Length: 114
Length: 313
Image (cartoon, rainbow over all chains, first blue to last red; front, side, top):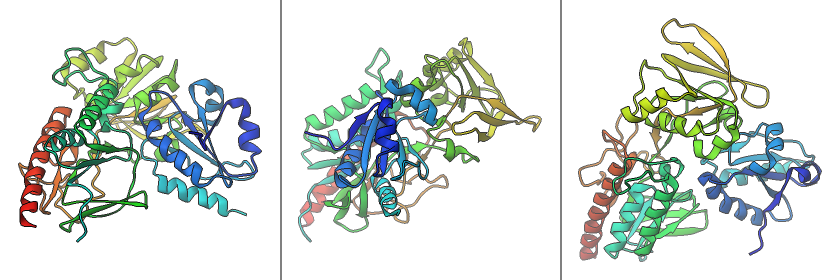
């Protein structure tokens, strides 16, 4: 099954996130992280729903420690939202309580921005 | 009234819900378990469980959670992972849940085993630093703090057990405890107090958090003198107990003053066909073993209810 979520590494961050020309939702995930496992199917479903309009990327925290430190990400999962210009927007979402409906509303708000 | 899709809907795939599913499925009830996450409830993020009977050696919380789920599925229960309940009707004889705004499941009986979630401190800066230095899940986030100096808030079982786990990563760990003693089980409390990496600040409470981008400082208050000071920190793990997840039940059933659901010996609520089990229920002790016991009773009571309801149709 092909995924609508693309995994990136820190080297791709600038091109794929900051210069994406589409809103980007970036998921920092870890292994041995049940909340990350729980988020994965929701994230995939949203990626499919917004395909072609917003990009859903994931990045493995352990393999990209420096970028996590630079962005101040210290928990998994953490969702970071970027608008079309590569600017981070709104509060990050973290932990087990991430609701699909809430993420969906956040993405729609990013899309509604001029 | 259209035919129900199931005999029993269980909300929450923690120890209580999964045990209820084992009993209900073995009783040949068409059983579905709904969970917003993956199965296991709070057990799945507990790094080890030492007091669950049948495991003479410690068992990892994730392994125990997986075993509960596998056993329930073996008997034919369906576990729906990572689904969100977007609408519900629990007062009527035919109870209904809308899932992810697109699918509906119905049943004459429901067991709500939604458990409890980690309590927040409710302090300035706390929500801003969630995921930027403040965490409630040591197994998820411990590895972020390799070689770092971390703080743990709380002095109960979770705080102590998770502190011991975090010492595998952290350079130093300071527990911030309101009382002048740990309330955890004596055996693990002693282990923590003997641990070379663990220090304890007694009679101390956090009052706020600060930092540029990520968390850098925690302000604490000495409860004896009232004096406040800032502590440098790389990360703060909060284990100060839990609060019930009762969103589905608000306004429908009677809650105790702390917000837990009042139910009878048979786990029945005041609404016919609506049962509760596990940590969400008002009771004296919340353990995996007591959750499992609740799940058993709730499933058997629900089975009786479903059979009686069939007889009435």
